[in-house]
Image (cartoon, rainbow, N blue to C red):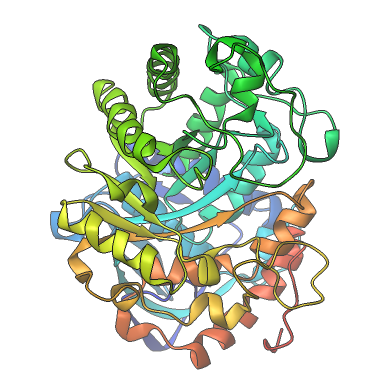
Length: 484
C-alpha cells in the first residue's frame, strides 16, 4: 500500500472474497455519497449489483469510531466475514475507502467488467496521517487545463491520500480565474498560453465545480494569485496597473522575473483588494496563496513594503496567508503558511528559519526533491532541470522533519509536490511527470517516519504499475523499479 499505513497486521488463514450478492452498508446518511461512489466503481468492474443499504453490509462503512482517530484516521478490518471501515468523520472514512481500493485487485479500477475472484488477504489496519497538509500543485497558467482535465487529475492524486490541491491561477503567461470587477484579466490576459496557443480560464461556475469535485474527495483547493512578480498577464490586461500607463504585450515564453506590480501605485492595492475578495469568496478553504517568488524586477525595499500590504488584504477576507519562502524576509501575519521551494541553499534555508521565528509554519516543496516538472534523467523528453535531475528515489528519500537545519519538526505543516507546466500541454505529459514520483511525496506526508525506507518502498511502488495500467495512466517506467 502507498502510503504505508501507521500499523497493519496480517490475519493468517483469513481471506475476504467479494460475493456476487455483496452489499455496502452505512450507519450514517452523511457517509452515503462515499459508499455510492465506491459501489459505482465496483459495479463497473465486477458486474455485481452492490446495493447500498443502512446498517451492516458485506462492506460496512461506519462513522461511529472514537474521536481519538482524529479527522483523517480510520481502522479497517478484512476477514472471511467481510470488510469493516471505521472512522470518526466522513473524511477518515474516505481515507479508509482509499486503502480498501488498494487492497482489492488492480482490475477493480477497470472501466469495463472483469472476471473475479475479488479477494483481499485478511488484514487489520489502524491509520492516521503524520502531517495535516499533503498537497500537489497544478500550474494551469503556463498551459491551461479544462475542468474535466483537472477532475481527472484530482481522481488520480486522491488515490494517495492527497488533501490539498494548490492551483497556480495567475502568472506572466495567463490569468485563469474570473474576477468580475476586472473582466479583462480573463478575457484578454487569459487568452494565450506558452507557445502562443489558445489559453483559457475558469468562469466562477467552473471554478466552483472544481472546488466541489475536490471537496467530495476531501481535497481543499488552495488558490494562488502570484504577486508582485509573475504578473505580466495582469499588466497587459490593464494599462492603469503600469507606472507609465502603457500595457506590455501578452507573453508566451518561459523566462521569469521580468514583471512586477508597481508598489508605490495606489491602484495596485485597489486591484489586489478586489482580486483577493473575489477569489476568497469563491474558495471555501481557509488559505489564499499570494505567491511572492522570483520578484527579481521588484526593488527589494519595495518588495518588503509590498508583502505586508498584500498579506493584509488576504487577512481582510478572513483567510490565512500562504506564500513562497521569499515572503519571510519581512513581517508576516499570525498563522502564515510559508512554502519552502529551496534546495540546500543557505539563503532559502535562512528564510525558512526566519519564517518559523515569526510563528509561521512550513509546507516543504524542495525543488530538487519535490518539483514534479524536473527531469528524471538527462534524456527525459519533458520537463526542466534547473534544480537538478530528480529520480524516483531522490523524490522519496528525504525526511521533512530534518530537511532544514534549525527548523523544529513541530513547525512543519506538511509537504507539497508542485508541477509547473512550461513543457506540459496535455494530460498524458502531466501523468508522465507526476507518476511514479507523487506517491512518494504523499507517503512522506502521511506515513510515520519509522516506515520510510526506499528499499521496501520501491517494491510497494512496483505493485502500483498494474493499477496504473488499468487506469490508463501514462506513467514513467523508471528503470530502478522492478515493475510488476
